[in-house]
Amino acid sequence: MADFVKIGTKAELPADGEAKEFEVNGTTICIAQVDGSYAAMENMCCHRGGPLGQGVVLDGKVICPWHGWGFDPKTGASDQDISMGVKVYPIKIEGDDVLVELP
Ligand code: FES
Image 1 (cartoon, rainbow, N blue to C red):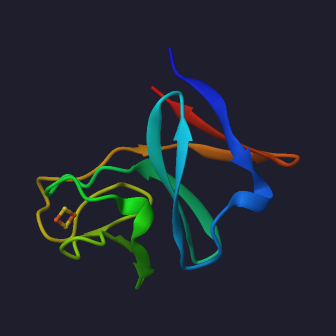
Image 2: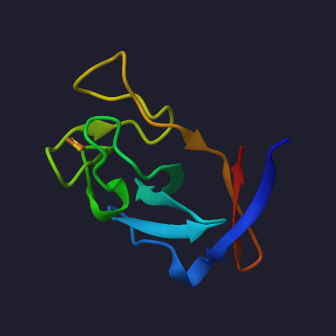
């Protein structure tokens, strides 16, 4: 059963238009702020494993730093190959805590 787990605090969240890596339960996830909303997604790009949390946000998509694939922050769908994508996770803020629901 999935649980919300704390991944950090509000102060640690990326600025608008940026992505960042967070470690939680031995896994790295990507948090991005896209147009004022936060998104949590798998950090490992489905193309060749690039770190999405080290990427950037462009035109509403999280862009992988290795070869530039773009991912929808809400669905995880890839722009380059519609049959591929990354997992996205529910994210919420409670007080100062940032919580992500991981499988
Ligand atoms: S590894 Fe992400 S675009 Fe190639």
